[in-house]
Every structure is written in C-alpha cells, then in structure tokens.
Length: 126
Image (cartoon, rainbow, N blue to C red; front, side, top):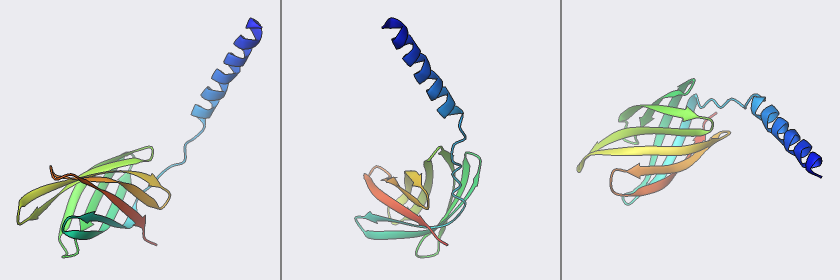
C-alpha cells in the first residue's frame, strides 16, 4: 500500500512539473480599448491604448474631453495594473487600475484616490 502511495505521489509530481513546463498562452494587450467605469459624477469612458513589451505596458487614456493621461503599467500572467492622475476641480486625483485580462476583455477595480473604488470594464476594439 505504501509503495502504491509513493508511486501515485511521484506521478502527481511529474504531472505538475510537465504542466508547468508547457508554454503559457501569451497575453498581449497592445491595441485600442474602450474602458468604462461608474463614479459618483456619472459614467466615465476612456479611449485607451496599450503598448506591451514583455511585462511592461505603456498606457494612454483619452478622456471624453480629449485630455490624454499617460502611465507605465505592468502585466504579469493575466493581471494588469497602472495608475494615471486626473486633474479636476478637486485637484489631482490618482486612479489606480487593477484587472484581469480575459481574451479581448479586461475587468477589475479602479481605486479613485482615497474616495473608494469602482469596477471597470474594458473591451478591445477591432
């Protein structure tokens, strides 16, 4: 019985090692996206462009008023994060985005300075 348990454990370890050695699907967010989220002042829509190089991501978000917000972000596996700063009547407000990439969509949360957070969604434009 003990010999069988050792064999099963060895096979499980080999299976896990083989699965880890398989190439992971490469995620590339490079392109144009439409990103939306709700704030107390209404829906925000940003035309967003990502340029990915490895785990580094350059982000340019254009507000509905045409202001460009730029950031350097990071992507690891399917998790992406970046921060931009919006200037408004209340001064500078950092927006920190953290999300998960799933094909041609990204979903996650945006931390709006110290005012709380909101869910955001982005879809890749064709």
